[in-house]
Amino acid sequence: MAVYPYLTSVAPMLDWTDRHCRYFHRLLSKQTLLYTEMVTTGAILFGQQDFLQYNQAEQPVALQLGGSDPKAMARCAEMAQQRGYNEVNINVGCPSDRVQNGSFGACLMAQPQQVAHCVAEMQAAVDIPVTVKTRLGIDEHDSDEFLYRFLDAVVSSGVSQITLHARKAWLSGLSPKENREVPPLQYERVYQAKQRYLELPIAINGGIKNLAEIKQHLSQVDSVMVGREAYQNPWLLTQFDELAGGADTIERTRESIALAMVPYIDSHINSGGRAWHVVRHMLGLFQGQPGGKKWRQYLSIKGPKASNAEQLITGALRYRQDRDSKLVDLTN
Image 1 (cartoon, rainbow, N blue to C red):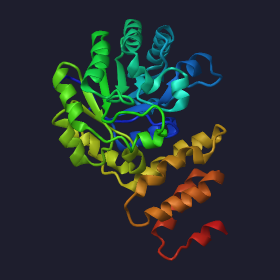
Image 2 (tube, helix red, strand yellow):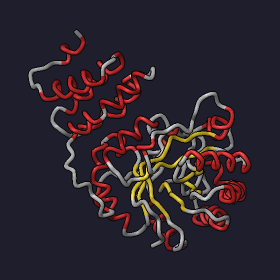
Image 3 (cartoon, one colour):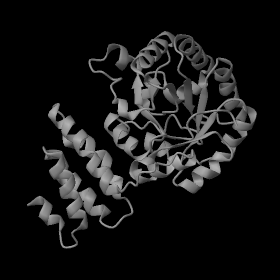
Image 4 (cartoon, one colour):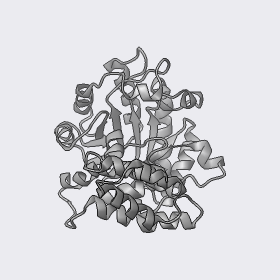
């Protein structure tokens, strides 16, 4: 296997993996690589906000970039390195109309030389890894020949690592959500790609739900990226560090993680933010556990107007454990 420092990562997910989500996830896993949401080069270079903002506690963290202009991509990579990001990843997987109109995302699979040019410019500008996340194909173009034409180009340009979402994407006719579910998973094609590029670290992504599946994939590829399951059932992240032999010796509980978020939430409130910006990412903390639904109900109803993090979190913990409490109690 090629050398890649992260056996696991949490996928970049628009509207989900923001800096608050990443701070929460880092409490659950110390070694997993965390990705930002996709950020466009235009937003970074010309936006009014600081789209590169993150908390040092999130490290290791990677920036996912959306764009196709090599000079702009290289400049953003430089800025990411200056800000301390561990990696810059090029989005060649998102199939949404908005992304296509911006000439980036999955449609770039049809322009391998353009992506290769971006990789080369970025690698020349920075010392941190420049990586690519892509699909297996687009529309009717989903043959191995099409995939390898794309991969050959970016590999020859010096890409550091590739993540393959084990599905093709339909650029029209399916929503982004449907594109994550309707095209069938083809894990074997990812395994075959790894055999073709033995010296290149390759990660697999798509439909992975538990530790057993992660271990199976790691017998074939270098790394595993988990998306929706990591967000909806975040306690899964507590098992990731065991894979690298670095399991935390401190016993963690869901309750202790929830309480550990209180200072962060309060800090965000004190800076003018809302508790809901943070706690919405914590709804799945008790997924599959007794009282998990009540935990979600409490945070969903009380969270949007909460102004005191300790009251909110301790209240949710008590409500989860109180068998006699009812939903009506929250709305009074």
